Image 1 (cartoon, one colour):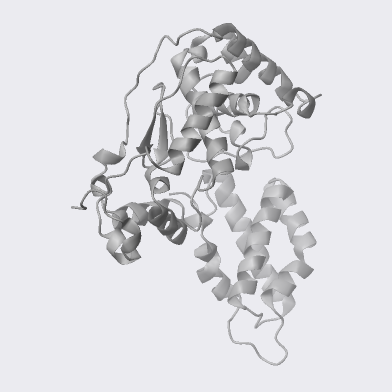
Image 2 (image 1 turned 30 degrees about the vertical axis):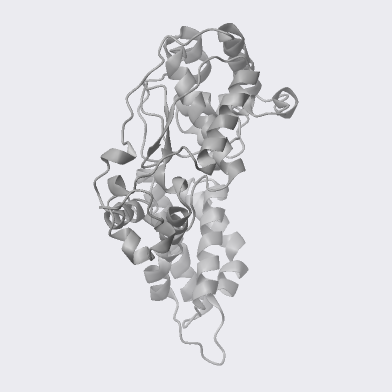
Length: 339
């Protein structure tokens, strides 16, 4: 067990990975996170919203279903754990103040929705959709839609009606956000106006639901950091650069000959044709295919892969691979064909 007040920064990554999360003695108080939470509360106060969502350390960013409180990832409570998160997952979500505040505003939207039970209202359902709609493991967004605000990355408002409300609330809450101008002529402006209407209604009023259960609290996570990251990496496999490596090495090779052409060069040369053909035959939007091609091209460059067959054969294999990935995505929501 880790002794209280131990300096986690004094441990190596290997030593950290052997520790149980519940033994880390982490707390929001006294950290930079406390300053972020205080700033969130000031923003709510400035809008005359009485409710202050309690914040606690959890396994990820979350607001438990219908529980009016906010879970903040435990790794943000210590610099050593932020470093480890970046090493294991390539980034640490919310690890700087602007990013953290965006996420806090989003989660506060969930908490306020539950605290005042807005999701039960008929008009809420008319504006955002059914709160009881099932969450899918993934979602396919429309990048150019003007029906949703754009706050977090990956067009998160399109994931679920509850996320749509929270993203809309976050845009509304953000200081100096001239949302009425930014979203002029957007359908999303109607959602922002409705959130503004709701917030004016509850101004100065206490919330009907003030407390909630802290699910996945850091003190209850008995797994080691090693096990935690093993599962997290498995669940996020497609986000890692090496996801395509084995297949790309089947199409290309690593040993360059005198007349070898770089794989990245060939893909860029035929990018437009691949984009057009895959989009035509799969029905997928070019945005999704283009993003996928960009990642694959970058990985080929990093691995220094080269073509070892004719361009015709090489592009046939590349096109087939891209088409397979896109069809997997269409049917399962995952490029790899599902979890």
